Image (cartoon, rainbow, N blue to C red; front, top):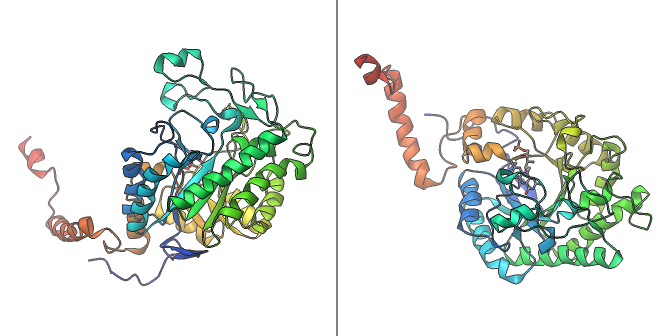
Length: 397
Ligand SMILES: Cc1cc2nc3c(=O)[nH]c(=O)nc-3n(C[C@H](O)[C@H](O)[C@H](O)COP(=O)(O)O)c2cc1C
């Protein structure tokens, strides 16, 4: 039997206090759009999708990009928090996640000029009139300037100052609803070419007013959104900010810009920088300077951690427990965010703990942990006896 109490505690499974909560470990489920909502409303699919990661041992579970206004949805299947009706089904999810030991979080988003898109399995491009046949019509999009994200994409309407102020208010209203729904953590979606990122990047922001031009001006709108949320979001609850650390394109947003921006974010009450990259333009194959190998954002999160001096999360092809632990041990991040690996293995956190600490089933929900513990004894006896599952069939050949 593996030891119930590991001799040496890993960093990955050392609990982490942030503001008023303690995450049981440093593993966060990265927000992942599921294209499964109607009218922005969460349903049982979202409860099962997110709930299984809490059962699977994650420390923080972050619900997907949730639109602060209807036209800010990436696709028509996105979650939303632009009206009060959307609170109750999300509350059920936040309650479930908390009940099973994880911190419930939600990503607040506005897709800007990259709104109105098809689900991946219908092309992942901009919605067109042809999509009306699937009852999925396009809607008008907004951005910092009248520049499309790529060929064939809609030209956004450039927001005026009233429009910007309206979206700042929408972020604050959505945060108030997220609080009401019982979430403890907000993750701003400030990455991947969506509205907040599109104001930062000189590729999409060609304005010549106080929201464009200098770095200070390009940072103004995202910082106003953060300030507005921090004012309504309770002191004891956390704010994470996902940013694209760099565009990876000529003339784009750089790592050095990010370091300056992150210092501003920390000074305004952001607790964790959630480090991603890219997406400034629709065609991701053009940001070739970002090489997407295992743990590919770790060098960027390490740089921001060092230069901006606060907590950072890193994400991107982190697939093994010992890899996650090595990233933390190397000081490249404070939190490990994981997306697709959790889709593949919702019990990833439990398996990672077994891998790096030799832990048994104590951390599993007892409804499965009790049985798996007993089964482990049976399996090990069979293996000791040299028996394999295919023996009977192979010997019959
Ligand atoms: C199905 C899917 C949906 C995603 N939706 C979001 C999202 O809503 N917000 C976000 O910031 N990133 C989103 N991402 C990016 C992931 O959060 C994550 O950063 C990325 O998949 C890299 O991490 P991974 O290699 O662990 O999957 C999505 C990724 C996938 C695969």
